[in-house]
Length: 409
Image (cartoon, rainbow, N blue to C red; front, side, top):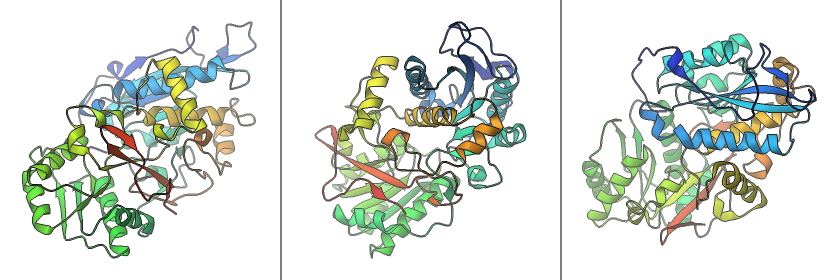
């Protein structure tokens, strides 16, 4: 969601290749006979993400590792009958032009069958995938995933709507944590951030919580003291904010220096980096959201994910890294699509069959998604529900007085 300069990138530098099985290059159809006597075919699954540039800190290695782990799990358990997947990775270099260049290489040279979109700048490439009827499992960084005409684009948390009514349940969550006045902050000139923060603020207002202070923060801002002072003056004890993690931490530290400790937050994301010793003290008692079940829930779905990440990615942490879900969940959706009747035979069949699915939940890891609908989830969080986690004594725990998940419909 972060805006970047439009830089022209070298075409060949846009691709990094990671193979999940020891096979030769794919044929023009994105598949070939496997190495087990020809009983399986190998299908190329593309991943586009930011491996270089400013957005690589949010995506990068954790996104690739999570995608690869989900592919390895499918291959090693013969999850897709008659099919083995090979992952090839394109670097968008954190620019829309880079996203287009990487996508073109993945399609024309790597002959991918489908694309996992883990890119905040995919808006620069989506028209090309529509023209090629390429299945895309992605994150809606722009309006392209809301357009029902783009049948090849699947938003794995649901098709977002910018005109969604205020979500009363979000306001009720703030109240449940003791909020009495709510401030609103967003990254300036990033529509997904400003509109999402507006939706959060409206959700507070609909349950009677005043929002006395609102600000859009320039993306380059590092000093949050003036915003902290304004929040103190407004008497806010809670905040809804969609800003980069470093901005969140800076604000919380400045508020703490002013003697202000927030009662509730909506916006900061649940991930392992929030537990870093250098920042966790400033975040004590605050709330972090995720569109998937937090690890502390220890459900069967969570335990399956954790076990796969440990086995295939050598990752064993209290929470996932920030870039994790941009890889794991759309890769899982791709695998779900491949298991549908005849889906691996043609891209058109894959798209048509996946469009019939109305209850995708990543094995119970997320709330159900309906691909037969368009424009039906809140664009601020791109999901049908949220799970909230609170930091207590340096660990993620469930917030008090909250029934998980918080429904957004």
